[in-house]
Image (cartoon, rainbow, N blue to C red; front, side, top):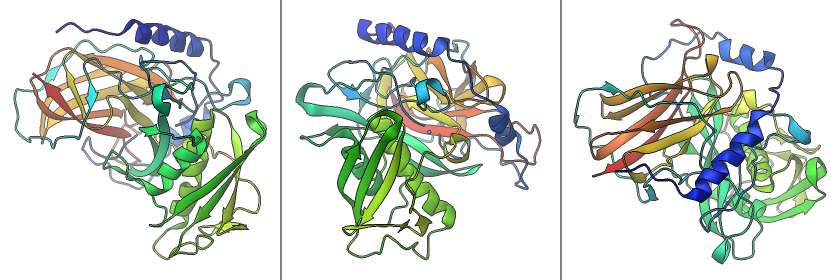
Length: 379
C-alpha cells in the first residue's frame, strides 16, 4: 500500500518544522537532573511502566476538524511553547472502538530500519471547523516510573456555542479517558459550572466555578494524597492553557463562593503552570491515538524528553514482540518531536509502545518513561 499523505498535512508538517527549527532550548540543568535522579526503586524489565503527556501549540486549519494543543518546554514569546501535534493523522487511520490485543504471535520480532527523526506531521489548529467540532486537548493523570504525571489526549467535541476552555475543563474533571492507562482524580460528581476568562496572553486570568453535590471540594478527600491533589489542580491549569493557547493564572469558585482551598491545596493566590519536569510525563505517543485502526505503512509521531534523544519503539501481541526499532528525537532533555514509520506488519491487534533510555544505566533509579497505545492493523 502506498504511504499517502494529504497535501494539507505536508504543508502543515513544513510549517511545524519551521516553527521549532530555530528555537533555542531552555536551561536544561533541571531537566538533566530530573532525568538522572536516582531513587531506590528496582528497575522493572518491562516495556509497560506508564504512559506519556504537555501544553500549547502552533495553529493551522485541516481536514474540517479544529484542533488545539502543543508541547511544553520552550520559552518563546512568554508562552509555554508553540509546537506540537494532534491525533488522527497516521496514514490510513480512523478512530473506532479499540479492539483487545489478540495475544497470539504472528511472526518473530524484527527490526524496522525505517525510523527517522522528524517533526510530527499531524497539524494543530485554532479555527472552528464545520459544525463547531474541535479536537480539544485534555490532560489526565497516570502512573509512571517517576510517579504520577500528566498525559494528554485529544477529544473531538461538538462545542454547541461553548468556548474551548470551558469544554476542555469540563472533560478533564468528568470524562473517562480513551486510554485505559490514564484517569482523572477529581471526586466523582465534580462538574464545571462556569468558566470566566479575563485578560489576554500571559496576563489571562481564568476563574473556574466548580461544584459537587456529594463532596466538599475545598477539602482533600481521605483517599486522595497531597500529590494527587496538587496534580489534579495542575491538570486543569495545563488543560486550560492548551485550550487557550496561552499561559494563564487560575482561581477557583466552589459552590458559588471564592475558594482559598481546593482539594486541600492553597488557592488563595492564583495558580500558575508548574514546572513541566515535575508534572508532565516524559514520553508521549500523539499519533496514532488509542484504538486507531490503520493500514501499513503508517507513521507514528509524538514528543519525548529523552536521555540523549534516544527513543525506542515496539509492536507487540501479548508477550511477543513482533517488530521493534529506534529513532531520535529532535533534541535531548526537552520535550521534542520524534517520528518513525512502520513499513510492514501483519494484520492484527497490537500494543504500540514508545520509550526512552534509562538514564541511570543500571538497576537502581526511576527507570524508563513509556507510553502505550492499543491499535489495529488492517489487512
